Length: 336
Image 1 (cartoon, rainbow, N blue to C red):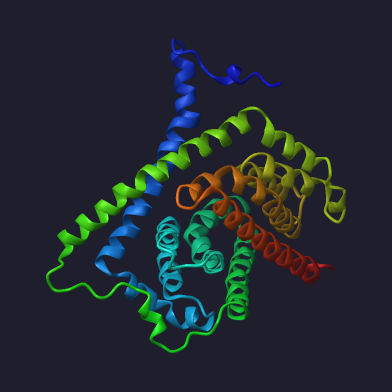
Image 2 (image 1 turned 180 degrees about the vertical axis):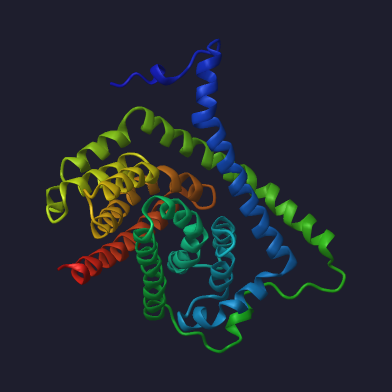
């Protein structure tokens, strides 16, 4: 059995405590602050009745998908803050205004805006290292995000009943604020709701995050990554150097894979096509592990753990399928 105490510092070891703060305390605090801000923004938008305006922005697409108006509001909000969008959906789920199926589809619906939030950072990270292949890689992942949202619209249209009339777009949303309800009153209402939800957010997120940290330190994720690395014979269609980039992609961080890919590209060991394929395959393989390790603590702060896990698994399964499709299309299209 692994020795759990081996990675727990003694109270008198200042250096070890500092390392634990950098590895666990500070990242957990940043996560909690981000989730808390998202929750507060969602509550404030609710209190100000701005969700009605947000819903109108995405109303045509949500209506085509037979989704409730709050899904359109969450879709529009996700362009600015995916955490706030999840908080909004969680509020409506707790109020029993969303069924489990509607929640699942609304979460999948947000694939495109949630990806666009991170697109500039991904591009700015890949472009200095890879140059032109970065444009292809980011473009293909963006198309995959569009496909996920488009597929969700079609799936939702098949699974959800059509709205009875246009009034459904606003019927489930709060009524417009009265003239006497100003920003101060709205903020007090939002703050009251925020304080009521915050203990649950902290109570679920902190232990889940610590569990993920413990599993990482005990080698659970490293063992899974090693197993995956040892069962990659199906990647024989790629050059051996490309397989090395893939292993770095899910065994370390994207930066390590980019560094290796950039070096091999400059030295002529890999072509731009090889680099793009390696990053696409690495993206597919690394997503499930990192989703459980990083995304689950964030989702558990808004949704019940079992529900959070279902949302993540569905989201990542659709993501992997869309990325696999784009990888196959690119491979066939560029095969000489």
